[in-house]
Structure formats: C-alpha cells, structure tokens
Amino acid sequence: MKARKEMIRMGTKIGAAFGGLAFLIFGLLPGFYFGSYGSLVVLQYLIGGPIEPTVLVRMFVAVGIFLGIASIAFLSIVVGSILGTAMGYAVEALTAPKEVKETTDAVAEIK
Image (cartoon, rainbow, N blue to C red; front, side, top):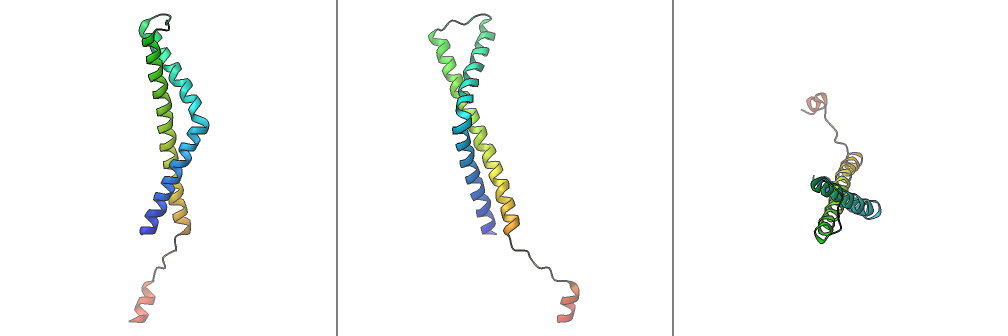
C-alpha cells in the first residue's frame, strides 16, 4: 500500500517538473504576449480611446505581463501534475502484483 502511494506521488512530482519545463520552453513568450495585450485591451476599454504611454499605463502593463506569465505557469504545472498522477496510477495498475482469490470450493476441501 505504501509503495502504491509513493509511486503515485512520484508521478505527480515528475509531471509537475515536466509541466514546469514545458512552460519554460513553450509558455514563457505566450504568457508575456497575452499578458501585455490583455492589459492594453482592458486599459483601452476603461479609458475609452487611444492610450498614451504614461508611467501609470506602463505599470499596469507590467502587472498584466506578470499575471499572464504566472497564470500560464500555474496552468502548465497543474496540468503536468494531473497528467503525472494519472501516469502514476496507470503504472501502478500495470505493475502491481495480482491478488489471487480463493474459491469457496478450495476452502471447503481444506476443512
């Protein structure tokens, strides 16, 4: 029972590591892009016209970039750990020794 839980935990950790690696390879630039673009769209909607590059706007865009990168990072790590947990369950199910069930006839003959 303990080995089963350890295998599932190991799958979760490996999946989270792969999710973090996938974020660094595939998610860093899209997080930067969508965070900055999203913050500019929100600012344009709130102001109601063209946006001038003031200090406040630049700070808002910087926060939007941080939120975009952080949200994609969290998403990839969580999805990676979920997939790793599923792989841990699958590996455990395939490698676990099968329990032999005794039939009632065999028990009756022993008595």
